[in-house]
Amino acid sequence: MNPELAIDICRKAIQTVLLGSAPMLIIGLIIGLIISIFQAATQINEQTLTFVPKIIAVFVTMLIFGPWLIELLVTFTTGLFEVMATL
Picture 1 (cartoon, rainbow, N blue to C red):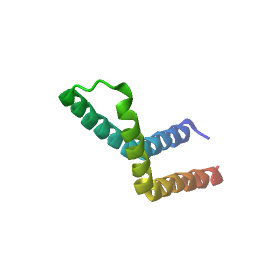
Picture 2: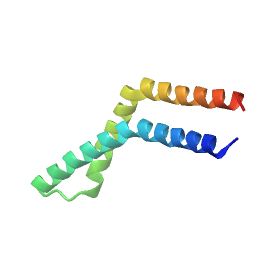
Picture 3: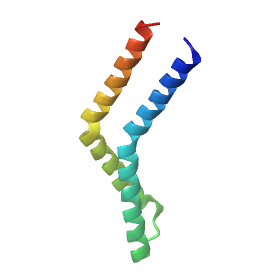
């Protein structure tokens, strides 16, 4: 295994992780921002108020993007096994 191949595999792994986690992170960020604006407008300073809506939003996002995430991981894993077979 040459260094270029190892770097390419690591690059694809990092890209897969970033693509797979992006939908949940973006939805969590948007929900957190909406709740923060609501808290600032109503002057409710409860720290735990943001956790439940964020968790629910992330789980719903995982349900919606689940098939795409599985396809992304299967594609990466298949490509990894194909590269391993050529070594």
